[in-house]
Amino acid sequence: MARRRQIYEGKAKVLFEGPEPGTLVQHFKDAATAFNNKKQGVITGKGVINNRISEYLMVRLGEIGVPTHFVRRLNMREQLVREVEIVPIEVVVRNIVAGSLAKRFGMKEGTPLPRSIVEYFYKSDELDDPLITEEHITAFGWATPQDLDEIMSLALRVNDFMSGLFLGVGIRLVDFKLEFGRLWENDQMRIILADEISPDSCRLWDIKTDEKMDKDRFRRDMGNVEDAYQEVARRLGILPESGPTDIKGPKVMQ
Ligand code: UDP
Image 1 (cartoon, rainbow, N blue to C red):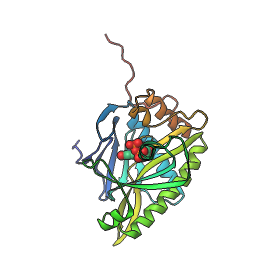
Image 2: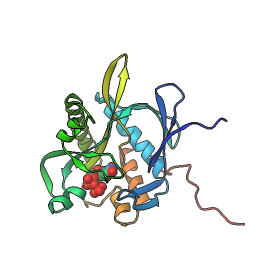
Image 3: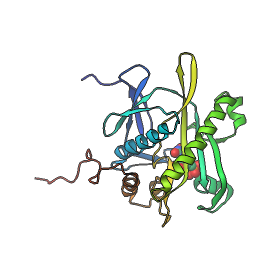
Image 4: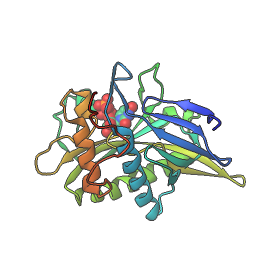
């Protein structure tokens, strides 16, 4: 079989040319990185789980009218998505103080915020994804004020919906990161949700114990990373009890 043309390789995903024009295949890897690549590792089975979790969340969001790039899942590690022009901004929505917000303002992690906060970061590995304001975004032409209105309103809808969805399975949605893309259809441009939504890009805490069920377990060397990701999928009801089947189990050596 002819090898597919690789369009892009990121830290956790690879994008290949899709079967039809305007589509891409998004392949989820087990590789994990943190602190802008300074920490690298492998979370066995992560790609399989994130493929499923992201599919599930994108489909649910699509059902409430949030436009997304997701088309369909192709196999254990791959999904077909619409090709978009990525807006070079990471949109972070926060409900509870954690991570860089806690550090920036010297606040205690776990403090509930009086209202959800939306932050923007410029996507640039060289610059370490700096925090930016709407002024930077519009002045530097990364997005127009209309694009930003749409992005902000979609991000808040995603937050409302996902907060409720996770609450229903005993998980607190602390914060998360979204990426958006531009999709052109007959000279009309639409902003749609792109990339992935998974425990790599969300902070998820157990409602009863506050136990972390996300990439912070990897970032902070807390152990049981695989189990935490699997538990999120299990609670969402999207993992076969036996777990991902393309993961090689222990082999008897002859
Ligand atoms: N996040 C992400 N990719 C990034 C930076 C952050 O997915 O490059 C997510 C992160 O998992 C968390 C949220 O965005 O759910 C807020 O992250 P924060 O700004 O606190 O940065 P961090 O502590 O991850 O450096």
